[in-house]
Length: 110
Image (cartoon, rainbow, N blue to C red; front, side, top):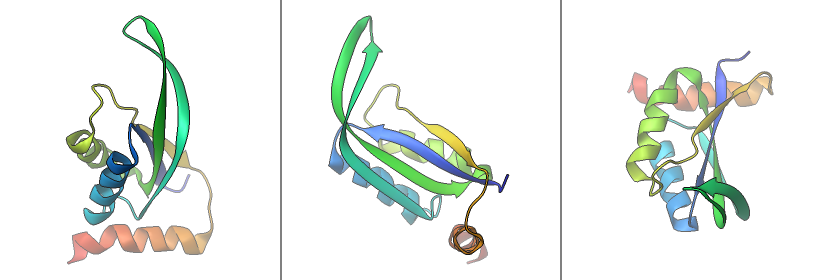
């Protein structure tokens, strides 16, 4: 394990996904956020099967920042129960992981 994570969340519009991405990067909670979509999600909600167009945000960060990341997402997210999942990064390019660490620690050093 590297101590790095990817945090996934979906949003109901490109604009909302962009707001989430900007919030995480501006606060140095994520070094990078990919916004992908649109994609189609099918799920159960309040007893009915739903289908919706969504945008996927994938944030690259460190595990110790997860709680702050979740809080930042909840502050700008419109969903009552947003998907917020952290997936550990078990391996990666040493240069890329070093860059993540540099970007994510810059705020704490300034």
